[in-house]
Image 1 (cartoon, rainbow, N blue to C red):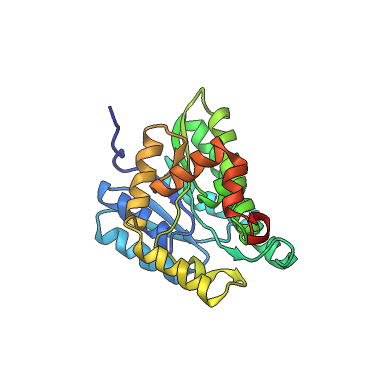
Image 2 (image 1 turned 90 degrees about the vertical axis):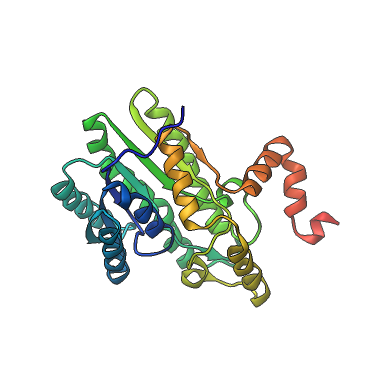
Length: 270
């Protein structure tokens, strides 16, 4: 029997100032959740906090840079002071870099690794001891279908999201004997500002196609957030809200050479 989201979860969400992070907040608010709204953009976080309060939840804004350990330590301390214990941690903050592996600058590699990989490591390392101390809880790490399929010209992004998948799988195994559930969220396209806030080079045509795919998706941020929360509450590791990701991932596992051949450069296909 499927479990529903428990009421009044004491929650910490990074990257909560907009997009999917805000969608998580608005999904939890009507349950009476107490949410630490964390983002490097304080104005966005304040807007999210006000929406939480309007929808039945409580909110505390804490500005934090997930790439910096000292900042995440301070976030944990403030969250602990306000919440007591944390029931639910959502490592959501993330960015994108576009471009081939050989042409992506080292500065962009360092930037995306700091946020997408170290940000999740810092979140887990800061909050997991407290969650373990109370004996139960939930962790959602936001990755991407890109971390499962490694499509071309997104090397830096693919690598970081694959790292989040691997970290989540490891945590899931390490915590299997506890009452702490871990899920890794791997969506494909939905409306978000990740293209505008990202780095790297994309042709105008490619950007247009991605934007269209985001807008046309029948599954948007509120649906993704609800799906992920349902998965983690019910103890399921993988959360793939879009069917295209599910089928492509199955194809890759069934026939890796065929899958990568279809996504390879035209010269290799020829």
